[in-house]
Length: 322
Image (cartoon, rainbow, N blue to C red; front, side, top):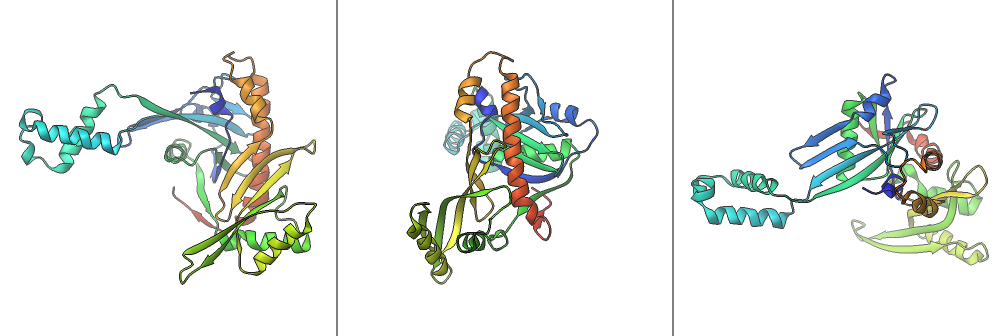
């Protein structure tokens, strides 16, 4: 677990989740659990930079982190243990011939767990927006989804949902076309960073795709015309690069938005400097600077929620379960 894990933001997943108003901080701080099935344990962890489990961002908004530890029981390791148990036969299992394969696998797992195997770990960060009732995480790992399921249960979350927006409804192709031909903004609060990846689906079942990586340069009108022409010829938007400005009018965050509503390749201004600052182990020394930085991350993510997602709440399919 490194200090930099608590400021890392390279991708994000956004959910609709309404936290209860009673005893929220205490509930978040005391979240913990384990899964024998996945050899996994987790808990809300104390942030080593500011010494808090939950950082208040004002107006009921929160930041917290969940620490995961799990055993990597690889397929090869498990198969080798099964082979060893079968080879030993009656001495270890007691008439192994009469044991079912399921029982042998279970015994193999138990044997491995008795060994001193190293645990892997991961920090997953969460932002909660009290105004719009959104939960934002910086990970799409299986552990993150387990944490979210645990949060829903332990927090008695009201109306938890995941966004499912089709390519047609998100409409990046139509939005980019309108921007390039009519100068119509694509999203509120967000700006096109002049980079896009297009694709052309071909074949009877659209199984073959041709891709174009396009950069539109302000000093080259032909680069813009090439993208417009490709869109006219059936190319669709696979992804676009967007950015937002902060209150000082400076580029604050940039990211790639895919046609399936995935937010990737996030770059946040000041990350390298903050990374260097928090890498030192001076407990509490950089707490104020860290909290200011996290608050800026929250504001930038809030712009993404309001600029992109809130326009799709009405009439959008929302999955009730994760």
